[in-house]
Length: 351
Image (cartoon, rainbow, N blue to C red):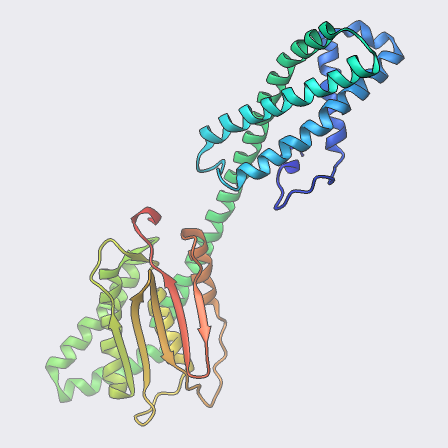
């Protein structure tokens, strides 16, 4: 369609489509019907209209395409629509006037050898149509662009909802699965007899994890304070179970103006525990800290002897949701010693 002519990732001067031929002819026919309808009684005149329309239209459309392509690199329709519209119209009218003058000079002065007054009158006459059709064309392109962006935004929103449900399900599954409940309740039962005060703390932290999942599952993002409390609760539960075999170091600021998607860090922590061996002589060390506008989760690599099948749904959904919320990507770095995931910190403007 019309807007597809301008929807390019690069610009090639000699790349043409059928629209580069059809649109100039259609516009030429419309103008002729308005200004000189009786001209269609002459085959010679019709032929002249087609040649004249192509001579004006093809270079104009390629010039307009270049202007659209160049402006898109600096001024987006979505971010600054008013400025983009004004600049597009002004630049395309200026270029159009130059092309109109050059084509009229070539046809009426050089080829037909008419007087210079004809050049002035023909150019002035064509100027009003140039302005009208340029504005109409920019409006159509603008409308088409916004319609497609709106449609894509709706698709992205629906996709985000599905991904959000998937990540919520994964987090709930990690917390409510029989192994987690069995291990937690086993640890609790032993605490009841050994240390009742610690058992009460265990129950409180255990309930905090479930409360967080229930309260934050509807939120797009959570602040560092909220996420840190969850990590501290989970860390306590795992410390009771693994003691010093699992070391979780949390070094996040108590910032209410820094955000992250809910349950992301919890899921990465769960993955580290799930896929690595944990022993007293080989402790698993998970470090969670902020660095250069990223929350970094790193753990030493010591894969289990029995390989754990992973769907990778958690990490992939975290990546997808961040593409929707931030210009920065989730980074994954794997070496022989460490597995590192870097999650961008979201600011108030992303919320």
